[in-house]
Length: 427
Image (cartoon, rainbow, N blue to C red; front, top):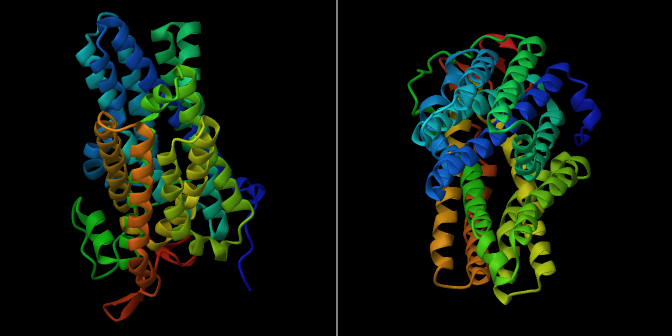
């Protein structure tokens, strides 16, 4: 009998997830508001667009540094404790930006330090969710998280600007710090303490490179991250071209804002469709076609369509990008619990780096060719690259799971099994 799709009500019936969900929204909003407010504060005090851009872009750089170095904390210490400490540390650092006479370079460095705490927070939360939710509730929760992340991304700029207008720059920073404090309180009150996952017998726990070794050793995980990285890189190249696209269509800042909102809106709708109206057994079969379509649909931008058609293409690309929701659930279940934090850290670090690089390369190309041409070429290239991964994806589907191997005369349970042992305790 095929597994029934879980409902949102069943997901939110889990008390621990309710607390993790609200804490996630608050922490995500705090990250967004802090980045916007500090970038504006830097620009107002220096008049330097470069410094302001460096402040806002520090979140990408922080992942490249903090992902490999700090995401492993989610496997070395109890994950609930990592979440709380990261939130409390950010709540302590953010108000420092509100102090008078803080020089702009110090503000950029401070924001970078705040952003460094996001990788271990994200890794710990991602590693904890499979222990909190079972069956299809875990997959649906990934969809809920994704949808809300898109909403926060769309409204974050407007809320940040409104806070600055109402409370002043430094007042807005204090509100930002409050979001991290409340997040820490929710996790402390609503999430039960769990021990640090222990390596199975005969398995030696090494250092930070374990996450990369796990991905390389397991053909399924290699296929998962390669599909995600490839499709996302070519799709996100278009996001870096919204300003030249708006200019090509004789638009203004409002046009750019609408263009930026199209893909996140589509991804939110796609996440709902995949998690609520698609049977769980069908989702894995849709991942590769949707990944190819998410980039390939942008090929039509090469024809310089009317603006409304371009918005539709971006929305469709975003909707297809929701393939990341079931892919994330497959990934989380396939990684052995003891390596889960580091593996998520490596996956997100690679994703952030490739997305940032794709935006930069697309921007350089758009200095020479029309933005629609660059978007169309990127979409076509991305679809071809994803489809080229088809044989690897199919071989991975037939491969032996990483956790299903005999260690010292006994089988180590896979993290995908609902009865897998985590640190000597059953879930």
